Amino acid sequence: MKSDIHPTVNPVVFVDTSCGAEFITRSTLSSKETRDIDGVSHFVINIEISSASHPFFTGEERFVDTAGRVDKFKEKMDRVEAAAKTRKGKKAKREAKVAANKQEEKKNAPAKKEKPVVEAPVETPEVVETPVEAPVAEVPANDATEK
Image: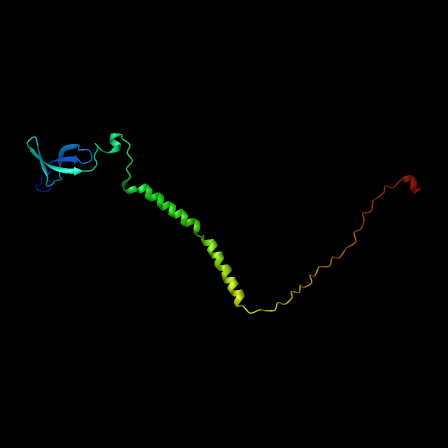
């Protein structure tokens, strides 16, 4: 095995600052604070959450609302909804702009005399009627009438 390639493993104590639980183990971490446990000097590593205090492991249900995040979100959504009610949509803005431009053009355009619109007579094609001959019914010849 090569020497000086592996990190040094130290005895440490992980202290959960939220509930005071301590876990004695070994780690590559170190700190300035030490504590003697059973005659062995251990580095003290402070942690905020561990399995002793986390709600998932303890089964407790806690509602942690740091800095009122839920309230901030609700206020933000109220502001957005209020702004949406006063704001016009793109389509309404575009239609208003087009209407304003048409009014400007009417004001600026010189008055023109309108010529009466004369409709051209519509030519109807002539329909030529062809006489339809009536079918001649054949009468059976009677031998008695011919004599």
